[in-house]
Amino acid sequence: MRYRVTLREKGEVTYVPVTGDLAHAGAMAYLAVLAYPLKSEWDKRDRFIEHLKGRLAKNYLGPWGSPERTERRKVLRSEYTQMRRRNIRQVQERAFERINRRLWAGQIALRQLLHGVRFDLQTGVSITIRCKHSVRSLVPDFQKLNKMVRWDEEKFRMRVWRSVQPVLHLAMVYPKNEDGLSYKYPFELVIRPEWLEPALLKAKNFLPWIAQRIPSFDSQAVVHLLPVPR
Image (cartoon, one colour):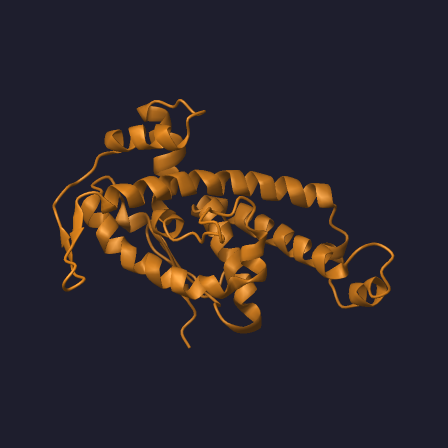
């Protein structure tokens, strides 16, 4: 699902709906881009979105034997109502595993960016101490967050850092639940997408900061996910 896509040599600009009845489609696009940020993965993005729609359809139908199920089935497209729950679950789990990797990198990058930043309590203005970070400096933080994963620098570079770069700013603004934890299986983010517009604006504001503070960040390869202009 792509709205008004502009291709660049390496990156991408995509506009998504963030308000009204189509906001849930924008939330699905956000999750799909986070899971599959590369142009070569667009077919996987679309497949993930289609299975999220299937999950929405299953939820809307309600339980077997309910009186409204037959009537509700009539207004839904058959390709969604006929999807097997097992297939939906498999596609979602693969995508959410990838999203979790992006979130690890997002947490690490946010921690690194905040390191060396002081705030003037009188004015609220931040005073940045120049402190640039290499990929090597990110590995210890990754190992602290993931005690069960013992990857060396090269594996971290390939599996986490390189793959997250186009969407690092999006990973940094991923919503938290009421306990302050990231959603493990974020279907609720699709059902209640009011978080999306402020998150995308915040992600856009993060980009110059990331480019300044993390030298290995490739700003030309960024996926710009923006609200549809009103």
